[in-house]
Length: 194
Image (cartoon, rainbow, N blue to C red; front, top):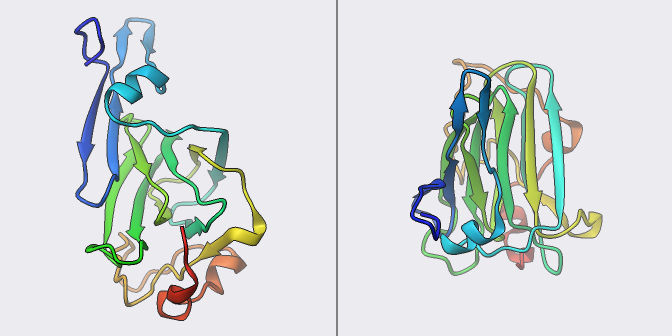
């Protein structure tokens, strides 16, 4: 709720330490719609206080492109706020916080241009998504710039995480060479610090 009592967005907690789905309110008429996808004070009113410093955008031409699982370690760990401008993705956040009771657990949310929802993923989580439609565009805010020395990834099909990616039986995602070569969580768990 905004300070004037009008509903501006819906916030749904997904059960893992700060991972939330956000659905901004659309104001539409015969011309189309208008929406505030980010308004700092309204986010703060809902408990979302991150200091966003950069926007990134990705485009995937094909269905079943998988990007992830990615994260950055300290001192450049990132919170992310993800939304889809065109198409749809199966978006995943996996808890990598040492000592967390949900370490190694993951949650997912389908983000789409049609649903107009966003996903907040705090630092301490690996992030990845699988495109569900061709020609998908994703826009996301981050709280720290890209830092190659802090950039890490985990294999998308790590059995320790057992993420249920919505691929056809026997299907394989389209991966970058970096994501194909990503290590298992067990191989890097002791080196992760947020």
